Image (tube, rainbow, N blue to C red; front, side):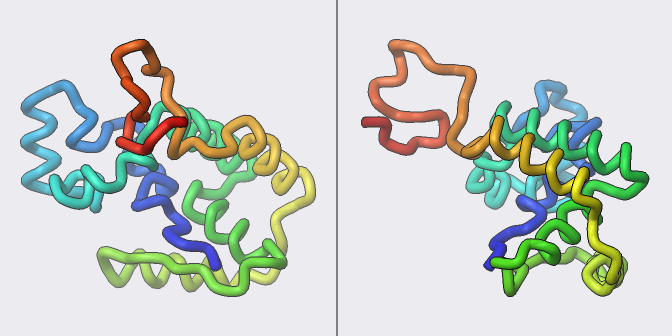
Length: 156
């Protein structure tokens, strides 16, 4: 089962040009995003719990996936959902939608019969191999961490 296949909205691309509210340093843009959230990442409650999809390593992987999608002439959302559909060991994909248009778009992507090319699947695998666990990766590691990672997980 593929859980949270769009990584809390991060794999839709909507946070690439304008960071999630909790990651933004511009107070006016934070306020704007909180008043008109694009999705979970702009909400204080959910946004804090979903940091794992916004780590630097995760954002680097998302940018790489977005390039693969762009080169293929499809959206990042389509790439993500069609990848889930095409993987033989994934029998179920859980997705969440904020509106009916998003649901219709997902159904459209899932019902397309043409598979992603072997080249695209290989590029996705290569990005994954460079970023195997981006949800636990961090470029901010130093003596002050006292055995805890960026999202609070214990580091042996």
